[in-house]
Amino acid sequence: MSKKIHSIRKSQLIFNSGPGAIVDLSDFSGIVTGLECWDLDKVERMERRTRRGFTYLFKPPTIRSGYGGIPNYPHGVVPIKRFPTWVQCSNPECNIFGQFWHVKSQRNEFKCQRCDNKLVPARLIRICKHGHISDFPWHQFYHDGGDICSFVEPKYRLVVSEQQSGSLNDLRLFCECNRHPEGKNLVEVYSFPAGKVCGRRNQPWIDDGDGPCTVPAIVVLRGASNVYFPMVLSELTIPSSESKYDKFFAQEFSREIHTLRGLTNLKIRHEVIHDLLKPEIVTQFGIEKEQLVLKIEEYLNDDSGSSIFKDEESIRREEFDVLSNPTIVTEDIVPKLFSANVVEVDSILQRAGIDKIVAISRLQEIRVLRGFLRADPKDGKMVDIGESVGGRYPAVEVNGEGLFISFNESQLNKWEKKTECHREM
Image (cartoon, rainbow, N blue to C red; front, side, top):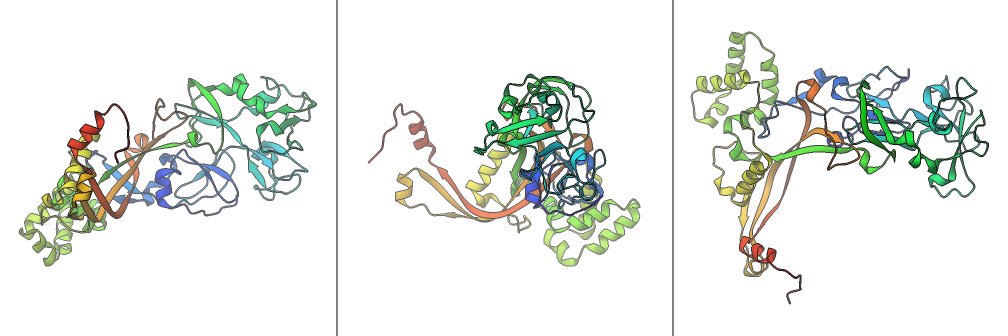
């Protein structure tokens, strides 16, 4: 089996290339496997307490992918499995179409067995709002609902008409059994009954397909926007939400804490902490060294994460309070995470409804990939990617700057009560 390494930015793994997402690499299309298939022993834990109560966040690794036949996963930290499994030869004189293990060359699995040209993924797949995804049932489609073919292994060709407008109406599927001498027009896939039934829990990103699914399926293009909706939860690292000790542990002491968690001998761990705490660090907190050691041990023993679980409204309200009035942040908070100053608002902006402007020179946001949806972002069922791996989720820290602008609430209330929209000159 040949192996290659591809690189995808860590932020992409959080937004559009997380577990269950289809990614296009240089020579094949694949689906990013679930966290169950990742080598989580090699990921870097993010020592972070969030107000949402996540107990274990880790920094996503760079994708490393090899390729191989089903059912074996490629080797690597983040393996990618080929999907869809149906491919077509890129040579218009060949047009071979089938599942890749039937049509690939023995010498190079990315090439056609007939003409040695590149294989490209099928355009169409099926998805449902419960998060399932599968190949389109091409065998049944060509044979009008059944799998009956005079060949033990059906031999298909996908031919483009002379018009070549790029639409499905220009594509016709042929089989050597010649059930449809003029070919089956691909525009019929949207009305094909078997294409509208999910049938089973197709989850190729974790090789789990057991159990029925009665939710209707829809046929979509492989690159359609409704194939993958990442559920990303974000929150700002607001100083008032964490003690100065938590911030120190998360920012300045993260690597050491990861090492200390692995020390089971409490006496040795106590001595190591003593050695790690330099005088300038202890001075920063204004307490005795032994007290700080005890706080660190308390933090290490509490592996449940934050004891504060807040809803979305509470989180946003807390962020608003600090951003609109950064002076409430006390001096004893460890720096590097938040720095902001109120900017004077002139009379012109005040008349325009702007109440306050805050210049933020330093701000950090935590973004966590909780799961994903398919087909319908409003009515779909979220696939929780961390549920089966002990509540572990990939996350990134985004550092930046910007402006916070708040509007005059009384003027906003007046605007909301207007029954007609008009331009004020």
